[in-house]
Amino acid sequence: MSDPFAAKRAAMLEEYYAKFFLLGGWLGATDTYKRTMWAAVPDVAVAHAGYGLTMRKSLPEPGADNQLIMAGHETMLAQWFHRPLRRDDIVLAERWFREHAAAKAFPSALWQAVMASQAGDDVYLPIDIWGFPGGQTFLPGLPCLFFEGMGGAISYLEPAMCRYFAPILWATKGRLMKLATPRDAEFGLRSAPCEALNITLLLARYVGGGGRLTSNDTAEFLFPDLFQSVGTIGHEMMCAGQTFDRTLGEAEYEMMDRFVSAMGKASLLCDLVDAESVGLENALRVIRNHPETSEVGIRVDSGDIAAQCVLYFRKMGEAGMSPRTIVFEDEVSPETVRKVYDFFRSSTGLEPTMLFPGAGGYWWRLIHRDTVAAAFKRSATGEHPNVKFSNTPGKESLGGYLRVFGKDDALIVADTSESIDAEPLFVKLVEQGRIVYRESFQVQSARADRTWGRYRRVELSPKVAEYRRRFNTMREREVAAARLRVGF
Image 1 (cartoon, one colour):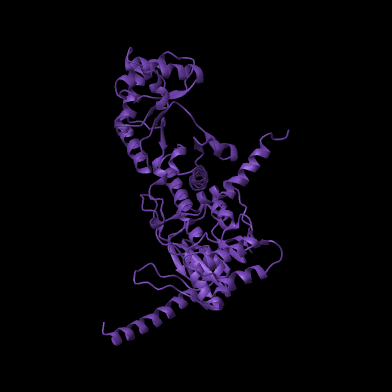
Image 2 (cartoon, one colour):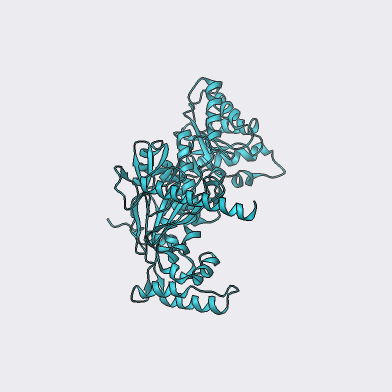
């Protein structure tokens, strides 16, 4: 039978990925200095070049162990490559930036060369992109994506490509949560600033840790093979029965009972009045009065959640009830999960198989560029390697047209001209402005399982190491001479 949802799903997926495409195909989706810089040196702007995207630091959370997981190609690449630019839009942008923008400059030679390289109204950026496939575990300090083509055009991508920090961090957090608990920690809809970003986060979480549960119904519709919706009682329903002519406990019990009677299962929200007294009594009463179902459990999300998990477990046992799922929330992180589990083990002598973490705000902690210090740097122009020097250790870039290989526990950064006795880890993501990466999310998630914990160190190939040595020697010599001249 044909899928009655297929057409709607396909249209929504197209709309979803299109939301990430730069607004209207407008060339302003970059930093202003891209215009001024490449207008000043048009010969450099059109020259063939290479750029690397590097995450300089790892996620500073217990268990990350200096590792990151690649994710997000589907939406991050869509920013510039979901569809081609339009020739008329490029011409209109030049008119605006030359005549009306406060910074009146436009790299005409660059964009004329881009348009001259192809016929028709559709204009694809003459850029190839290589990088780690989704789910690949890697280490900070080496390129995770590499860009080749007309240098000025690649330069325009910098702000968009630096946004890879977000799905990479999300995927890594997904792995840390998976390491903390065998139970799937649900991710709520409201933690992201918009619907599209929420789905991107969910996809990255799936790649990194296989998480499926969500309260985002749209995510489940778009990706039914990946996500599973979960829903239960909210505070808004629990307090709806309150009036001044009845007790708070009676109002709470009514809503619990009505929900279970209608739905047949629930995670009873017990903290509306007091989770350790009124809520406890009402929850036990509801469970007792519905012997027809064993799918009524507990949800705690305020106060001492570790102690409350033990309290509810013990009280249900004393009442002769079979163990029920106890969902615990309240800004749950992997570290919180471990603490709750450890407290339960030490208090009961049992494994916390019935405890279920629900995580919301955790997924957005530290989600900003500075966490990983995402850096987009030119590494070659024509036949010459380029580097960015720094007075801060760890911020220097590598020179050459770079690829990354894996051998034993090492990630090896090499120039494309070298023959490396190791497994090539980069795959082609974009070819001449067209996205060619099409792996399923299941394949990406399986790669995260295979590669987590595998790589422990970074090595430079002979040529890349020689580029670094020669540039550093030149820099040291010239800095020393200049300091003598300026008397510093």
